[in-house]
Amino acid sequence: MQTVQDLNSAITQSVELLQNKYTNAINKIFDTLDKRITGGLGTDYIEMEWELMNKNANEYLDEINSAFAIQ
Image (cartoon, rainbow, N blue to C red; front, side, top):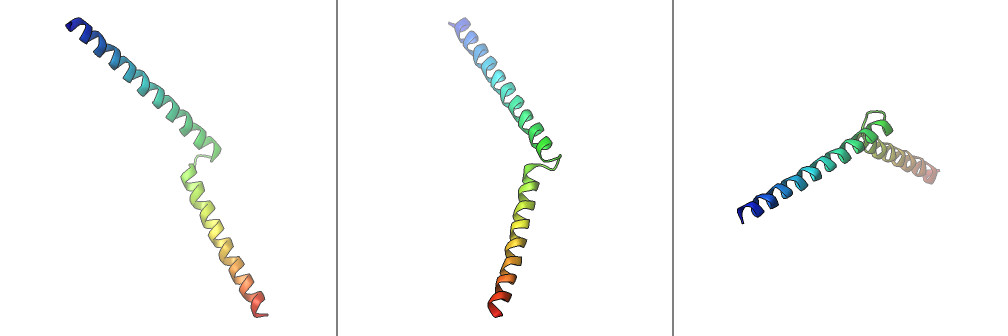
């Protein structure tokens, strides 16, 4: 009975190790892809810059529309 439990434990540990290696490999692939796509900046930085550009554009358009309405 102890041998069966030891075998099951070894199998469980092996499966967990494989899952961890698989997860780490996937994370590494996505990190590499993220850096290559964004030129090393990262998608978080690109997203922040995009939101800032949209905010500035909206404020500019608000000023233009306000000036147009006044005229």
